[in-house]
Length: 529
Image (cartoon, rainbow, N blue to C red; front, side, top):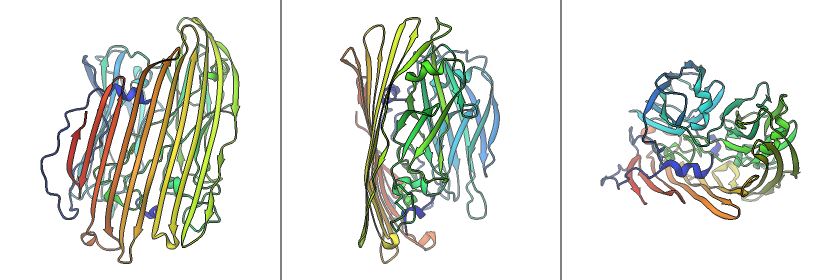
């Protein structure tokens, strides 16, 4: 049995989340010997969104139930009491579900702009409730006028899968002015983008997810056609999310290896603590400012997103795109030019070694450097973007896949230098994603999964060579869960220990929270700062 057969903006901004809420060790509890019919409501160790000490008002964006694949449609209308300028806008989703249900993927669009992508926890028979918060200040332009709202968490409800997903989404607006919010938030029209002619900075964000229950949901485990495994991809597991402008490569990135709450054949790993980013899918960002001189001609330009490594004709990836634009308020037209474009070919080299324990070793990577300038009202500004991707993985499995294991690392290094009037500014970001685990099934039908996931990043800003703001993120999940397969629920004898430690520290402060659960009972909730 394969694990595939189981249920299907920058780190510095995160430091603005402020100090952690008081985290104290949980009161002494004695976990049950096995999972029961109820467990602690889902939660994560991520920091809460910091909220300004200023007047605020709330607007309900959506309140509905999801029973099938029919989207919720409504209208967002700005509240007259909220004003038009905000220092912060916070989205909050409150959800609840009861009975039996798989994990489900969802999105929320306002005026066609995707402002939130999420997945759901799997419920207990007695029911669970959970909440997610997200800073959505960068979409302020979208919230200033009435817009259509569309939300979907695709679901199946029948005699077997009884969980109806009940959600409410609100926006809280805090008065003031956001220091760095974009002036415009655009979406593609039939695959093309037309920017204002005075755009001086352009950033694309892509909510890239491999999902849908097929093999691309577990893309990091796929193997070449020559290897005997249940999920195939001609080039193996190397994936890369690319953005092109008029057919020219403009951005590359490593996708985050999200594990949804039914992943690795073992839902007992995720009932309380999800894997990193599972409840708040973060978009990949691409600085397209070197192309601003091309985009500012007032004509539509084709912008396309593709995922390297997906077999031809195969679906399984969703890649909606938002375009964030900052304009030159003192100029009606900004001109410029793309001056550097250095792009190699992505490399992925899977090597299959057969044996009692089959093995696939993969190394992949890619580099891209682009540079361009814009002539603005405050002088010529040159932006240089360099990005280097690398992936190594070792995948081991036995015939029949009763043992299936992976040890993988992805790195995504990015440098953005802005050189214009005043000192040159460089932001360097080093992202590392890790996945190390295995699923085994014994002769007695006992399935055990041991898994560690890592989401790490470091960011350093320099001005004229001198270090300024910096931050480091380390979000680590570990889990060890087992149950007896192919028996009724009351005979599974399921046990599991899971933990998450989310550390975020740097020039703006420190956050450190640790959670531990045993058999669905929260046994530790500790603040380390």
